[in-house]
Structure formats: structure tokens, C-alpha cells
Image (spheres, rainbow, N blue to C red):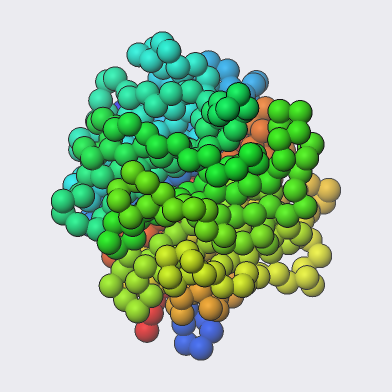
Length: 453
């Protein structure tokens, strides 16, 4: 089903708001401009919309594609929990919704290829895939960038967690190459292991070749985010954190330090390098990973961000040699004098066509015995060596502990395990997040512009 979402009165009053900055940070003549907040959509019967992801067309600045879980306040992971996509072709001012009949839907992710095909992936159950139950990896393809979707999805098996996508923009010959990466439980030598699962499509997500499964060790791990460099090199990140004690029982055998690694492939995802060490500065939680594929001086530089173990700061590492050597972790926004900050979570990274790195995160503050949230953003113009002072993106406090969110708040207290940040072809960043300013989690978006001169 596709439903057009008309612009709100707020949006109509904010015509031309992309050129108007609500919030500006300046250091050494550089600025961060944050645009007006725009409400993307409401949920089905005002249901909570959580865990959004955002993708931008590689060459069309106004073409945006979002995905989200349509939750149920009564319970999570029930058959009524589906996923939806939202499409905008006017830079985020108006959106059209499409609902996917995926029961117990979770972990949605989207991408648009240089050829204009779109891919939607999620975990869940679909009637066309009877061999896949909860946790099955479901892939939908769109030949027109997310306007319409194929009726029957592709199934990539069960036992997955946190699936993500990378597209290849390295050449016209690879304009429809798509990589899907996830963590997957497998049986190896009669032992349960966690692996990094990689599947490649050469036709925009219509079909996939035989997947590759990498089992780095006997430790429990989370597969995280893949990126593709300017020459087509694929790099996928993962973090290990637990010894296999009592079949991975929660809280047992936890490592003293979570370790972050990279797997590198130079042959289109057929074979991979040994794990390449990146960082041990991270606490529990999902990380973010991005590559600079611009033609600037930081071309092919890698950026990795995660929540520091203390939870009070986001740390960033960078690599200039395809993940062989990484910089020391740089703490950003670690102001210990702000006593109301409870934690900083869920960093999101993106690099634009000018080589500017943007990083956004969810910041939780304690207010009158309630934990309220806001989205903040910073940026680096020097390859991650320094970052501008952060600016607030959300223009209202989100205090999600309400009956309207119910079970969705219990599972996704920050509106999801991740949120959306993407750079469009004109260099503008777009942020998409789940916000409970009106009690129930809904989707909001804003632009972030970081001029380089």
C-alpha cells in the first residue's frame, strides 16, 4: 500500500526552510546549519514508529528513501509489528508510505543504487517465504527507486541479526551491485558460532549469489556495517564481546573490552582478509562506519564511531590505509561539566561529496525525574582530526516513557537501535529519527549543511 503524506501546516509555514538555519555553530569561520524539523509521518492508527533508516539516491539530491518499524504499544515482535518505507522526491518535504507485509518485522534497512534500483531488507516472516520464520532475512527490490516494490521478496535464510547494506558506486559496470551483511548463527565442527554473513547481488537486489560466511573465532560477535571504497573494495565491520559460556547466555563470559574489527575483500566479496583490528574503546551498543568516496584529499579514508565505555562520549577512529592502521580514538562532546547528561548513544556517520564527515547521536538528559532525549550533530572538515562544536538537531525534547509507546519504549527506549543519517548528491546531510515529543514515537527529519568555505 502506498499512502501520500501531505505536508503539515508547520511545513507549509516553513517553505524554503532548507535555506534557513535554526541553529548555527561557528569555529574558525566554519558553520553548521541545522534546518527546520519536519514531521515525516504518523504511524498506523498512531502506532509508534521506531528504528528508522535513511538512504539517498547517489546522483539525485531530492530523492530520499526511509524505512521504519511500525510498532505495537501492546507488545513487540507480534504479527502486527510490520515495517514500512517512506519515499520523498522533493528533498524531504512530502513523503509517500509503502507497507510491507512482514510479520514480527525488525531491523529495517534501505539503499538506492547508482542505477536507481532500491533495496529494502528486514528480519521477519513473510507468507511467500514459508521456510523462513522469525529472524528470517527478507529482501524486497524496487526497479524505480522505491515508488513501487516487487510483490515477492527474496529470502536469505534464518538466524540473522542486524542486517545492513552497502552499495558499490565505483564504476558504471557495478552500478547495481549490492552487498547485504548480517550476523548469523552457524554450526561449525559441532559448535555454535557467530559469523559475518555476506551476500552479493549484481542486479540491484532482484537475486543474490551464493553467500559467504566468515567465522573469525569462537567469540560471540555483532556484524555491523559494510562500506565500499572508490575502487570497489568491500570492508565490513564487526565487534566481538563474549566468550561462548553456556551457549552465549546473557551476561556470562563477557570480555573486559569489546573489540572492533574489519574484514576486507578486493574481489567483490568472494574472499576476505584476516580480521583487521580497529578499536577497543567501545562500550556495548551498535557502532557506525563510513567511507569517503569523494574525489577530495581524504578519498577512501575510513571513519568508525561508537559509544565510549563510559557512555558519556562518542569516540571516532579513522584509517587512511584501508583499515590496516587506525588513529587513536578521539572523544567528541565529552563535556563532563554538563551534569544532566545521562548518556550518549547510537552514533551515525555519513560523508558527503566534499569529504565532510557528519556524525549525529542520541543524547539523553535527566529532567524532573524523566529521561528525555535530543539529537545532536557535529562535523569534521579535516579527515576526522578535529570536530566542530555539536549542535542540537531536534527542536523539542523527546520524553518517550509514556503509555502511548508501551512495549515499544521497553524495547527501544531511544526510538531504536539506530537512526538515519545520509548525505545527498548536493552535499547536504539529512537526519531522520524517532521522536516522542507528542508522547508516541513518530518520524522527524531535518537538514544539516556544513559549508566548506
